Length: 95
Image (cartoon, rainbow, N blue to C red; front, side):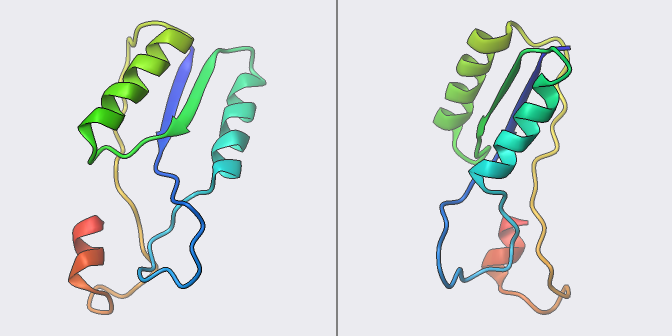
């Protein structure tokens, strides 16, 4: 199957205020390469599902790169290595 993979890629920042994990662009490229090694077309890019315009752009670019979607798997979310009571409300909202 052709595959489109979207992931939030945060720019590198020193002293990030939250403890959430964000993959770098290099990790997204590793995923793209691993999938493409199976002979399939792959679209892998930054995606923030909280931003409708960016979501629409990702969909348009993915469809242009790999064709129409037949199956959708939505696993939007993030994780933070913190105890439930050990992080800010802002981080809880993000998760």
